[in-house]
Length: 75
Image (tube, rainbow, N blue to C red; front, top):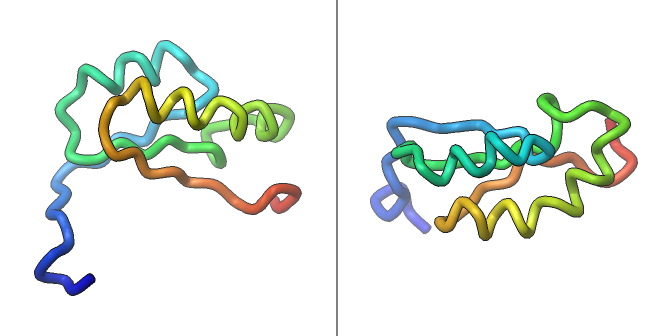
């Protein structure tokens, strides 16, 4: 992929994947990209649950979803 084929994103909406109301609301926003956050916005005790919620959250936002996550057991 060259820079000529990369999308132009003017607005990015970071959504904690563990907050269902935020995920649901993200689907109604007009952000150029929705980033489903599994890291900084998720408590350490919720990281494993966040990874399990990610596929459903990606379906809810109903567009190409980006994920922000560290490897399991990291950080």
